[in-house]
Amino acid sequence: MVFAIAALVFTSGAVEPLPRAAANAAAKVAASAPAAVPDASARPIPSAANSEISKTDTGVEKPVGLSMANSEALALVTVPPIQSGKQPELISAERAPSRRSWLMLAIAEHSAAALDAYSTRMAIGTGAYERDPLMKPFANSPAIYGALQVAPVLFDLAGRKMQRSDNLFLRRVWWIPQMASTGSSILAGIHNIRIANRSK
Image 1 (cartoon, helix red, strand yellow):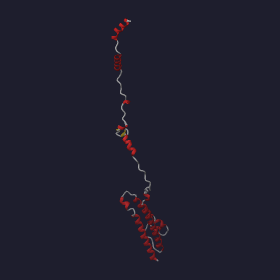
Image 2 (cartoon, one colour; image 1 turned 180 degrees about the vertical axis):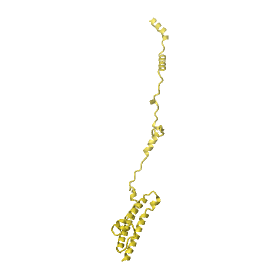
Image 3 (spheres, rainbow, N blue to C red; image 1 turned 45 degrees about the vertical axis):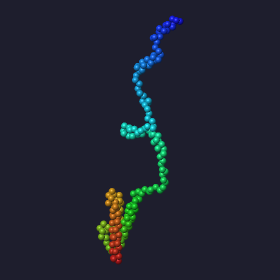
Image 4 (spheres, rainbow, N blue to C red; image 1 turned 30 degrees about the vertical axis):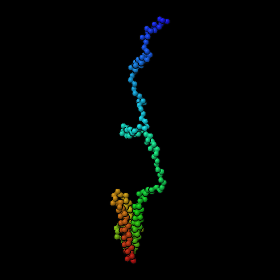
């Protein structure tokens, strides 16, 4: 037994304490191991309270997140209710007052042309003759009613085209062709009636 204790004392100088041996082993493992690569997932994630607006590569701003203050502010926003009432009526170009005026002038114009044709037939019946070379072939037949409606139709189309013109001046004087045609037909009808009454 004494011999065993003496052997233990002599070999105790070659045995290192446990803490020093563990430290040396850890240092050797760290020296031989490759350098640790930082993990991207270990990066701190920006919190919602510190979120800001970041820019993409194209320069477009995009929100990273909303803060609690912004969320509370959005929660307090209220949308007023839509007031129910009569909706404004949309008036198309075809229902504009100028179209109604155009139709009224067209009716007056064609009525005046019919008066001209009737008075012409009446004057020719009393012995008069037609001086207009364009209307002379139709003066002795009812075809004069249709022939005298050709010019008013052309004036109607001209007035309608002037209404839709890009020229402001033409849009303001669109009624002149129809008024001129109506006035000339009325004057011609009055003239024919006077001739017919004079020949009786």
